[in-house]
Length: 159
Image (cartoon, rainbow, N blue to C red; front, side, top):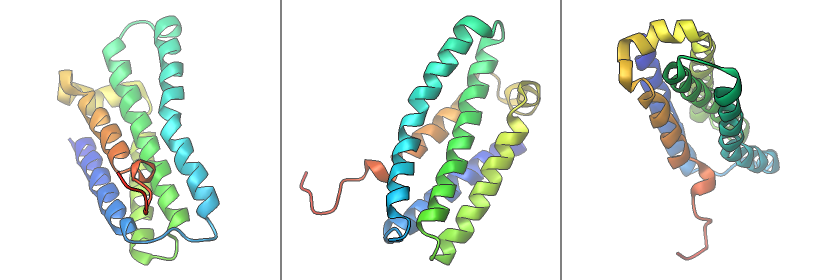
């Protein structure tokens, strides 16, 4: 149950940091790197999905649903850690964003490390949630893309 609490905490932190960053501009020193890193974060899931597909089809046998829900959640947690790191680099002059990003990064990375072994994931989350164990990962990924800065229209463009 603590695992679900941390997943909710990470989601709330990402929403809070995203709302704070919405009214701020990216630091001029890190803008070029921030844009490239943001694009990389958007395309990483497609590459990961291809790798997971090959693994699930040819290497890993049995326990498919456990492995699938585990892969989605742990991957989402690493994406969140990377997004918080992006916020650290992009908005390092804003103390509120900096503090929330450090906390978010620490919680997301620690949770990903704790849940990485499949057996620990099964005992901590899959055995508790059962058939809906893939839902936290899907919710995290959906929220990640909804709040992604790259999906926002550029200022000055009409839609």
